[in-house]
Length: 322
Image 1 (cartoon, rainbow, N blue to C red):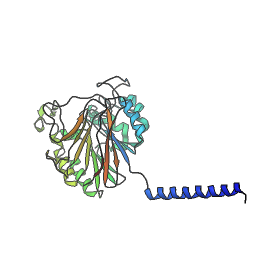
Image 2 (image 1 turned 30 degrees about the horizontal axis):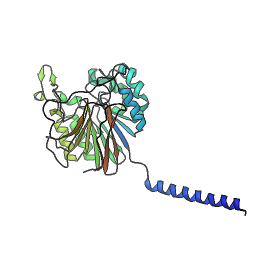
Image 3 (image 1 turned 90 degrees about the vertical axis):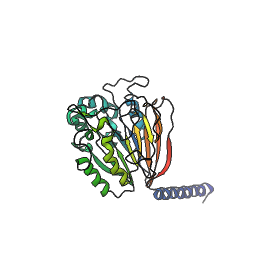
Image 4 (image 1 turned 30 degrees about the vertical axis):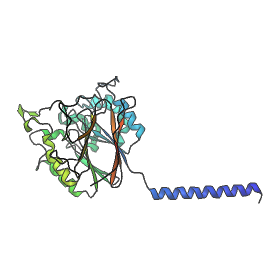
């Protein structure tokens, strides 16, 4: 065998060994941990893009999601303004986000109920949104993920014990054997804002005028079950809250709330007075989204700013599940 032949055989063996080593390592590593992005309060009634804090920027958010290429996109309500009509969804949302529909898990927002029974929302998303109730769950990797319907909690029926959504959530949490759980919805238990939107039904003020009190029963269930994270929007800014129970008490085994209402519709001012004690960080100058990497028994979180907007950083690695 001449020198060139020996060199070829030797090179072939090296390449074969390298390939075998790579495949063995890949098999040992297994599939990558799922990546989730979450954001709400997105598409305007028109495709117009503007500049600044009051702009319609949802098309850029859609591009940001594509650049991340997540396994799942959690839509945190008010996905299409102003009343969630099917014609509005087709005119804007479908143009900007239509190709992401296969990875989208939606939750309805109050603007979706601007159309009776959220008919446009349910018509667009179909069975994945579980009409007509709008709450459902699924597993992703080792995690259990729950989508809740917050707008229906504000009426006379509410979401307390004995109501359909409460009892469904209790049964769903009891049936899950996942160590780590995420829930997402539009309106949330904790907020810091310059106003409270009074909940009124037929001229009667409910829940003492509080917009957050109707969610306490659901939060009690989630806290007792050890839910790790609750995601939502409604307030058009970003917030991360320290772990809390259902009554505003800091708790090491509590639920971490992320408010991610930064999907492009507009940005809101902060609340009056000092920042709430359990609100760890917040920003209202940049659009963007939350990225979560879901490990077997922990998660990474990272705020991702829309390119060109004011820089802001908030991230954590390997936060352990309860």
